[in-house]
Length: 353
Ligand code: ADE
Image (tube, rainbow, N blue to C red; front, side, top):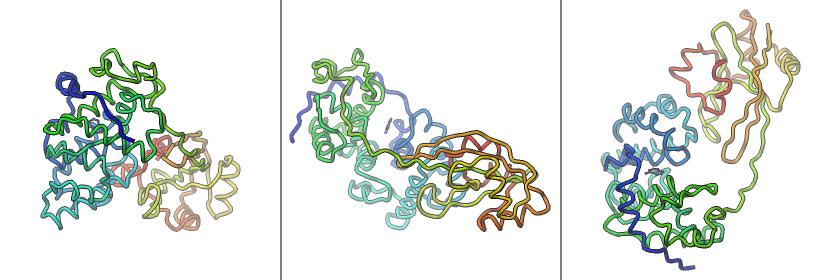
Protein backbone atom coordinates (compact mmCIF):
# COMPACT_ATOMS: atom_id res chain seq x y z
CA UNK A 1 0.00 0.00 0.00
CA UNK A 2 1.30 3.45 -0.85
CA UNK A 3 0.21 6.34 1.34
CA UNK A 4 0.83 10.02 0.79
CA UNK A 5 0.86 12.50 3.62
CA UNK A 6 -0.02 16.17 3.12
CA UNK A 7 2.65 18.89 3.18
CA UNK A 8 4.22 18.52 6.63
CA UNK A 9 6.36 21.66 6.57
CA UNK A 10 4.10 23.70 8.95
CA UNK A 11 5.23 21.46 11.80
CA UNK A 12 8.81 22.76 11.59
CA UNK A 13 7.85 26.31 12.59
CA UNK A 14 5.26 24.96 15.00
CA UNK A 15 8.00 22.88 16.66
CA UNK A 16 10.39 25.82 17.02
CA UNK A 17 7.70 27.91 18.70
CA UNK A 18 5.99 25.26 20.83
CA UNK A 19 8.29 22.38 21.67
CA UNK A 20 8.92 21.50 25.29
CA UNK A 21 12.44 22.41 26.34
CA UNK A 22 13.81 18.98 27.12
CA UNK A 23 17.45 18.40 28.10
CA UNK A 24 18.09 15.79 25.40
CA UNK A 25 17.05 18.30 22.77
CA UNK A 26 19.79 20.70 23.81
CA UNK A 27 22.57 18.29 22.99
CA UNK A 28 24.09 16.56 19.99
CA UNK A 29 25.97 14.09 22.15
CA UNK A 30 24.84 10.68 20.83
CA UNK A 31 25.41 9.12 24.26
CA UNK A 32 23.01 11.52 25.98
CA UNK A 33 20.44 11.13 23.22
CA UNK A 34 20.76 7.36 23.41
CA UNK A 35 20.21 7.35 27.19
CA UNK A 36 17.12 9.55 26.79
CA UNK A 37 15.62 7.42 24.04
CA UNK A 38 16.12 4.19 25.97
CA UNK A 39 14.56 5.69 29.11
CA UNK A 40 11.66 7.12 27.08
CA UNK A 41 10.86 3.76 25.49
CA UNK A 42 8.47 2.71 28.24
CA UNK A 43 8.37 5.72 30.53
CA UNK A 44 6.77 9.18 30.40
CA UNK A 45 8.88 12.31 29.95
CA UNK A 46 8.13 13.72 33.43
CA UNK A 47 9.07 10.43 35.07
CA UNK A 48 12.28 10.15 33.02
CA UNK A 49 13.71 13.62 33.80
CA UNK A 50 15.08 12.99 37.33
CA UNK A 51 16.48 9.60 36.29
CA UNK A 52 18.09 11.11 33.22
CA UNK A 53 19.97 13.76 35.22
CA UNK A 54 21.06 11.36 37.94
CA UNK A 55 22.20 8.72 35.45
CA UNK A 56 24.33 11.16 33.46
CA UNK A 57 25.79 12.78 36.56
CA UNK A 58 27.06 9.36 37.65
CA UNK A 59 27.80 7.96 34.16
CA UNK A 60 28.73 10.95 31.98
CA UNK A 61 30.06 8.97 29.04
CA UNK A 62 30.21 5.60 27.31
CA UNK A 63 33.37 4.56 29.17
CA UNK A 64 31.73 5.18 32.54
CA UNK A 65 28.67 3.16 31.54
CA UNK A 66 30.81 0.29 30.27
CA UNK A 67 32.69 0.18 33.60
CA UNK A 68 29.78 0.59 36.02
CA UNK A 69 29.35 -2.34 38.47
CA UNK A 70 26.10 -4.18 37.86
CA UNK A 71 24.57 -3.53 41.29
CA UNK A 72 25.09 0.20 40.94
CA UNK A 73 23.69 0.20 37.42
CA UNK A 74 20.52 -1.55 38.60
CA UNK A 75 20.25 0.95 41.44
CA UNK A 76 20.43 3.88 38.97
CA UNK A 77 17.61 2.27 37.01
CA UNK A 78 15.54 1.24 40.04
CA UNK A 79 11.95 2.42 39.52
CA UNK A 80 12.18 2.79 35.74
CA UNK A 81 11.42 -0.89 35.15
CA UNK A 82 12.26 -3.06 32.13
CA UNK A 83 15.80 -3.55 33.36
CA UNK A 84 16.92 -5.39 30.24
CA UNK A 85 17.01 -1.92 28.67
CA UNK A 86 19.94 -0.83 30.84
CA UNK A 87 21.65 -4.21 30.67
CA UNK A 88 21.60 -3.97 26.89
CA UNK A 89 22.92 -0.42 27.08
CA UNK A 90 25.89 -1.58 29.10
CA UNK A 91 26.51 -4.44 26.68
CA UNK A 92 26.42 -1.92 23.82
CA UNK A 93 28.73 0.46 25.70
CA UNK A 94 31.29 -2.32 26.16
CA UNK A 95 31.00 -3.11 22.45
CA UNK A 96 31.54 0.55 21.53
CA UNK A 97 34.64 0.64 23.74
CA UNK A 98 36.15 -2.47 22.18
CA UNK A 99 34.98 -2.12 18.57
CA UNK A 100 34.93 1.63 18.01
CA UNK A 101 37.51 2.85 20.51
CA UNK A 102 34.79 4.43 22.66
CA UNK A 103 33.37 6.68 19.91
CA UNK A 104 29.66 6.28 19.24
CA UNK A 105 29.24 4.97 15.66
CA UNK A 106 27.95 7.52 13.17
CA UNK A 107 26.60 5.04 10.65
CA UNK A 108 22.94 3.95 10.79
CA UNK A 109 23.61 0.23 10.25
CA UNK A 110 26.27 0.21 12.95
CA UNK A 111 23.94 2.01 15.38
CA UNK A 112 21.13 -0.43 14.56
CA UNK A 113 23.37 -3.41 15.27
CA UNK A 114 24.01 -2.34 18.90
CA UNK A 115 22.19 -4.40 21.55
CA UNK A 116 18.80 -2.96 22.53
CA UNK A 117 18.61 -0.55 19.60
CA UNK A 118 15.82 -1.15 17.09
CA UNK A 119 14.74 0.74 13.98
CA UNK A 120 13.06 3.56 15.90
CA UNK A 121 15.90 4.21 18.33
CA UNK A 122 18.57 3.92 15.63
CA UNK A 123 16.66 6.47 13.52
CA UNK A 124 16.22 8.77 16.51
CA UNK A 125 19.94 8.73 17.40
CA UNK A 126 21.11 8.97 13.78
CA UNK A 127 18.87 11.95 13.09
CA UNK A 128 19.04 13.80 16.45
CA UNK A 129 22.79 13.44 16.93
CA UNK A 130 24.12 13.41 13.37
CA UNK A 131 21.25 14.83 11.30
CA UNK A 132 21.32 11.69 9.18
CA UNK A 133 18.14 11.30 7.12
CA UNK A 134 16.48 8.29 8.74
CA UNK A 135 12.89 7.99 9.98
CA UNK A 136 12.13 7.64 13.71
CA UNK A 137 8.60 6.29 13.86
CA UNK A 138 7.30 5.41 17.30
CA UNK A 139 3.73 5.03 18.58
CA UNK A 140 3.27 8.82 18.67
CA UNK A 141 4.25 9.17 15.05
CA UNK A 142 2.10 6.24 13.89
CA UNK A 143 -0.89 7.92 15.52
CA UNK A 144 -0.21 11.25 13.83
CA UNK A 145 0.19 9.60 10.42
CA UNK A 146 -2.86 7.36 10.83
CA UNK A 147 -5.03 10.37 11.66
CA UNK A 148 -3.65 12.60 8.90
CA UNK A 149 -4.45 9.82 6.42
CA UNK A 150 -7.71 8.58 8.03
CA UNK A 151 -5.98 5.20 8.01
CA UNK A 152 -8.54 2.68 9.27
CA UNK A 153 -6.50 -0.52 9.47
CA UNK A 154 -4.61 -1.85 12.48
CA UNK A 155 -1.57 0.45 12.79
CA UNK A 156 0.47 -2.22 14.56
CA UNK A 157 0.23 -4.76 11.73
CA UNK A 158 3.70 -4.96 10.14
CA UNK A 159 2.43 -3.97 6.68
CA UNK A 160 0.67 -0.89 8.11
CA UNK A 161 3.71 0.12 10.08
CA UNK A 162 5.90 -0.21 7.02
CA UNK A 163 3.55 1.82 4.82
CA UNK A 164 3.03 4.56 7.45
CA UNK A 165 6.78 4.78 8.11
CA UNK A 166 7.44 5.15 4.38
CA UNK A 167 4.80 7.89 4.16
CA UNK A 168 6.23 9.80 7.14
CA UNK A 169 9.64 9.53 5.60
CA UNK A 170 8.59 10.57 2.09
CA UNK A 171 7.04 13.72 3.61
CA UNK A 172 10.18 14.85 5.44
CA UNK A 173 12.40 17.81 4.85
CA UNK A 174 15.60 15.85 4.14
CA UNK A 175 18.01 18.56 5.24
CA UNK A 176 16.14 18.84 8.55
CA UNK A 177 16.09 15.24 9.72
CA UNK A 178 16.51 16.06 13.40
CA UNK A 179 13.89 18.80 13.57
CA UNK A 180 11.41 16.94 11.42
CA UNK A 181 11.57 13.75 13.49
CA UNK A 182 11.41 15.66 16.78
CA UNK A 183 8.51 17.73 15.49
CA UNK A 184 6.35 14.75 14.52
CA UNK A 185 7.10 13.07 17.86
CA UNK A 186 6.27 16.29 19.70
CA UNK A 187 3.02 16.79 17.82
CA UNK A 188 1.98 13.25 18.80
CA UNK A 189 3.05 13.73 22.40
CA UNK A 190 1.46 17.12 23.05
CA UNK A 191 -1.30 17.78 20.47
CA UNK A 192 -2.35 14.68 18.56
CA UNK A 193 -2.99 12.93 21.87
CA UNK A 194 -4.06 9.29 22.27
CA UNK A 195 -7.26 7.95 23.81
CA UNK A 196 -9.65 10.11 21.87
CA UNK A 197 -8.53 13.52 23.13
CA UNK A 198 -6.57 15.27 20.36
CA UNK A 199 -6.23 19.05 20.64
CA UNK A 200 -7.12 19.75 17.02
CA UNK A 201 -7.80 23.41 17.78
CA UNK A 202 -4.06 24.07 18.21
CA UNK A 203 -2.76 21.63 15.58
CA UNK A 204 -0.75 23.15 12.72
CA UNK A 205 -2.03 20.36 10.43
CA UNK A 206 -5.72 20.48 11.41
CA UNK A 207 -6.67 21.95 8.04
CA UNK A 208 -5.21 19.00 6.12
CA UNK A 209 -6.10 16.17 8.51
CA UNK A 210 -8.39 13.59 6.90
CA UNK A 211 -9.46 12.07 10.22
CA UNK A 212 -10.64 15.47 11.37
CA UNK A 213 -12.37 16.14 8.11
CA UNK A 214 -14.26 12.83 8.46
CA UNK A 215 -14.86 13.15 12.21
CA UNK A 216 -12.66 10.13 12.91
CA UNK A 217 -9.97 11.81 15.03
CA UNK A 218 -11.21 10.25 18.27
CA UNK A 219 -11.57 6.69 16.92
CA UNK A 220 -8.26 6.48 15.08
CA UNK A 221 -5.76 4.92 15.19
CA UNK A 222 -7.12 1.38 15.18
CA UNK A 223 -5.08 -1.02 17.27
CA UNK A 224 -5.92 -4.67 17.35
CA UNK A 225 -6.48 -5.76 20.94
CA UNK A 226 -3.40 -7.55 22.24
CA UNK A 227 -3.78 -10.99 23.82
CA UNK A 228 -4.85 -10.64 27.46
CA UNK A 229 -2.16 -10.74 30.12
CA UNK A 230 -1.66 -13.82 32.23
CA UNK A 231 -2.61 -13.22 35.86
CA UNK A 232 -0.31 -14.64 38.56
CA UNK A 233 -1.34 -14.61 42.20
CA UNK A 234 1.47 -14.42 44.75
CA UNK A 235 1.73 -14.08 48.46
CA UNK A 236 4.62 -11.73 49.30
CA UNK A 237 6.25 -12.27 52.67
CA UNK A 238 8.44 -9.67 54.33
CA UNK A 239 10.38 -11.96 56.66
CA UNK A 240 11.75 -9.79 59.43
CA UNK A 241 14.04 -10.30 62.40
CA UNK A 242 14.82 -7.13 64.34
CA UNK A 243 15.86 -4.48 61.78
CA UNK A 244 16.77 -7.08 59.17
CA UNK A 245 14.59 -8.39 56.36
CA UNK A 246 15.12 -11.36 54.06
CA UNK A 247 15.86 -10.91 50.35
CA UNK A 248 16.87 -13.19 47.53
CA UNK A 249 18.21 -12.51 44.08
CA UNK A 250 16.06 -13.40 41.08
CA UNK A 251 17.49 -15.69 38.37
CA UNK A 252 19.94 -14.13 35.93
CA UNK A 253 17.53 -14.39 33.01
CA UNK A 254 13.83 -13.73 32.48
CA UNK A 255 11.51 -11.20 34.13
CA UNK A 256 13.32 -8.77 36.48
CA UNK A 257 16.56 -10.73 36.04
CA UNK A 258 19.10 -10.49 38.90
CA UNK A 259 17.09 -7.98 40.93
CA UNK A 260 16.41 -8.47 44.63
CA UNK A 261 13.04 -9.36 46.10
CA UNK A 262 11.33 -10.59 49.24
CA UNK A 263 10.28 -14.20 49.56
CA UNK A 264 6.93 -15.14 48.04
CA UNK A 265 4.63 -18.13 47.69
CA UNK A 266 2.40 -19.04 44.77
CA UNK A 267 -1.29 -18.24 45.16
CA UNK A 268 -3.17 -15.92 47.47
CA UNK A 269 -2.86 -17.29 51.00
CA UNK A 270 -4.55 -16.30 54.25
CA UNK A 271 -2.47 -15.35 57.30
CA UNK A 272 -3.32 -18.75 58.79
CA UNK A 273 -2.10 -20.59 55.69
CA UNK A 274 1.13 -18.56 55.70
CA UNK A 275 1.70 -19.43 59.33
CA UNK A 276 1.07 -23.10 58.61
CA UNK A 277 3.42 -23.24 55.57
CA UNK A 278 6.28 -21.43 57.26
CA UNK A 279 6.00 -23.36 60.50
CA UNK A 280 5.89 -26.57 58.45
CA UNK A 281 9.15 -25.49 56.75
CA UNK A 282 10.79 -25.11 60.17
CA UNK A 283 10.51 -21.37 60.94
CA UNK A 284 9.58 -20.05 64.37
CA UNK A 285 7.17 -17.17 64.00
CA UNK A 286 6.27 -14.51 66.53
CA UNK A 287 3.59 -12.71 64.53
CA UNK A 288 2.06 -12.33 61.04
CA UNK A 289 0.72 -8.88 60.03
CA UNK A 290 -1.51 -8.21 57.00
CA UNK A 291 0.07 -5.69 54.53
CA UNK A 292 -2.86 -5.69 52.13
CA UNK A 293 -3.27 -6.44 48.44
CA UNK A 294 -1.40 -4.84 45.51
CA UNK A 295 -0.99 -5.45 41.83
CA UNK A 296 1.65 -4.77 39.24
CA UNK A 297 1.17 -4.87 35.50
CA UNK A 298 4.00 -6.01 33.22
CA UNK A 299 3.77 -6.28 29.45
CA UNK A 300 2.68 -9.92 29.38
CA UNK A 301 1.77 -10.74 32.94
CA UNK A 302 -0.03 -9.16 35.87
CA UNK A 303 0.94 -9.94 39.45
CA UNK A 304 -1.88 -9.87 41.97
CA UNK A 305 -0.21 -9.85 45.34
CA UNK A 306 -1.18 -10.23 48.96
CA UNK A 307 1.49 -9.12 51.41
CA UNK A 308 2.28 -10.12 54.99
CA UNK A 309 4.96 -9.09 57.40
CA UNK A 310 6.29 -12.12 59.24
CA UNK A 311 8.21 -11.48 62.45
CA UNK A 312 10.67 -14.29 63.06
CA UNK A 313 12.05 -15.53 66.33
CA UNK A 314 15.66 -14.29 66.67
CA UNK A 315 17.23 -17.58 67.81
CA UNK A 316 16.23 -19.67 64.84
CA UNK A 317 15.80 -16.97 62.16
CA UNK A 318 19.02 -17.65 60.27
CA UNK A 319 18.71 -21.43 60.10
CA UNK A 320 14.95 -21.25 59.41
CA UNK A 321 15.58 -18.94 56.47
CA UNK A 322 18.01 -21.36 54.84
CA UNK A 323 15.57 -24.23 55.27
CA UNK A 324 12.89 -22.20 53.52
CA UNK A 325 14.99 -21.16 50.51
CA UNK A 326 18.75 -21.48 50.07
CA UNK A 327 18.89 -18.15 48.26
CA UNK A 328 17.45 -16.04 51.10
CA UNK A 329 19.71 -13.83 53.20
CA UNK A 330 19.16 -11.08 55.75
CA UNK A 331 20.01 -7.44 55.07
CA UNK A 332 19.50 -4.33 57.16
CA UNK A 333 17.02 -1.80 55.84
CA UNK A 334 19.60 0.91 55.14
CA UNK A 335 21.63 -1.61 53.17
CA UNK A 336 18.71 -2.11 50.76
CA UNK A 337 18.60 1.62 50.07
CA UNK A 338 22.29 1.65 49.35
CA UNK A 339 22.99 -1.53 47.46
CA UNK A 340 20.06 -3.73 46.46
CA UNK A 341 17.80 -2.85 43.55
CA UNK A 342 14.25 -3.93 44.37
CA UNK A 343 11.86 -3.73 41.38
CA UNK A 344 8.95 -1.31 41.65
CA UNK A 345 6.56 -4.25 41.28
CA UNK A 346 7.06 -4.49 45.07
CA UNK A 347 6.60 -0.79 45.79
CA UNK A 348 3.45 -1.37 47.88
CA UNK A 349 5.57 -3.39 50.31
CA UNK A 350 8.81 -1.43 50.09
CA UNK A 351 7.99 0.74 53.18
CA UNK A 352 8.03 -2.47 55.24
CA UNK A 353 11.43 -3.54 53.96
N1 ADE B 1 9.69 10.14 23.21
C1 ADE B 1 10.60 9.45 22.52
N2 ADE B 1 11.59 10.24 22.09
C2 ADE B 1 11.29 11.49 22.52
C3 ADE B 1 11.92 12.74 22.43
N3 ADE B 1 13.08 12.86 21.80
N4 ADE B 1 11.32 13.78 22.99
C4 ADE B 1 10.16 13.63 23.64
N5 ADE B 1 9.52 12.49 23.78
C5 ADE B 1 10.07 11.42 23.23
